[in-house]
Image 1 (cartoon, one colour):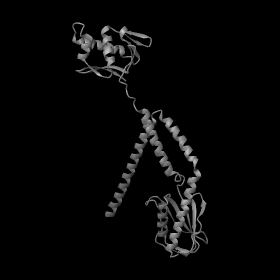
Image 2 (cartoon, one colour; image 1 turned 60 degrees about the vertical axis):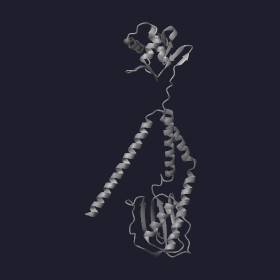
Image 3 (spheres, rainbow, N blue to C red; image 1 turned 45 degrees about the vertical axis):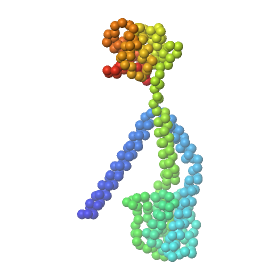
Amino acid sequence: MSKTISEAEKKCQKSVKEVQRLVKFKEIVCSLLLIMSRKKIYIYVSLGIIVFLGWMFSKPNTTSVDFSERVKVSLRDVGNQLLLSNQDSTSLVLPIEELGRFRYKLSFQNPLSFEPSIIINTVKNSFKKADLYNYYRVEVKQCVDNEVAYSYEIKNSAEKDIIPCKGRVLPIDCYVVELKFTHTASFIFSKQFFLFALLFLLMVFVLDYIFSKPKVVENEVKKTDGVSKLGVFTFYPNQNKLVKQSEEISLSKKECELLEVFVSKPNQIITREELTKKVWEDNGVFVGRSLDTYVSKLRKKLKEDTSIRLTNVHGVGYKLEID
């Protein structure tokens, strides 16, 4: 019963991990799609592709040669450990042969005996130190007839690794060890590519942040010789008018005086008391609703420019908002 529960728990944990991986993948894809939805990102992608292609073709041989040399050093270390396990500290490990792309051959001067677990652990530890790929197939072949005396395959996962007959010792004989890396097309540049992709994505996010950063709204209205530039309008306070391109919009004296006050303090709240004092103080009787009426008239005349708004701040006053 306990065994069944243990297996069920393992399956459950595996399922949870798979779901977590899917969720993370979905989050990454959604983030990338959100960025790609902006037109300017195509510039960054094009730049990244050009840089990536240049990087890919700049040093193709160096990486391959370095990988091959690291494999040969690791296999010599494996050969030495196997000889020592046979109490042999004098015979030679013959030069490592490169049989083909990602295929290598380890051979010995004298016959020896193999205990499978020794070669499995030795190769694993040596490759780990050399930071080599964890997908490979090992075949121990008899020198006489080239028949496979023992073989196993590592797939970077204990559940997927194929390791048969672990405890059966091979008798003393002449053997060669042939090793082939699998899934190698992506390995040679996998780590470099991951680093490049990470740096490129970081560059995209930084550039996207810089160029999409909202511009600070200038809390000013441009004025020249008493004439104010207000969005698409030009305000002539001395002539009581607004001009939009060739269209002239007449303003009453009160509308003009109110607009002058608003233009002097853009994006700031102006109290009703301040407005009435500046516009109506020396003009006789002030009716409470007059201010609201004139503000409403100004709104209608400014409505064609959506970047300009006369906003009512309830119980306080008004504010001329300029984007």
